[in-house]
Length: 113
Image (cartoon, rainbow, N blue to C red; front, side, top):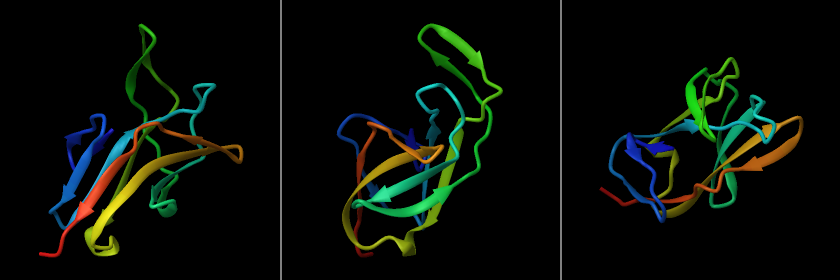
């Protein structure tokens, strides 16, 4: 996962100093199928949703897959929609009305200019 083109790392904290937030990555359901939708969750509340997924080449357990399954996603939000302060951010995928969460979570901080 990337946040404004910065690679995600464990205990990731990102200071938002651009006029936008771009979060991108890839995700499949446990059966390696395309999701129906994906949500960006901020402080336990949905902030944005996407249903647009693109194909990608990725690695799963020593097997490189040029997938016909669309797994890559992007969420773009103008920073004006994000309150000042620090926020817990996570990603939730939905497939057939079942919820799947990424373990990748991060803190997003926006300070007054």
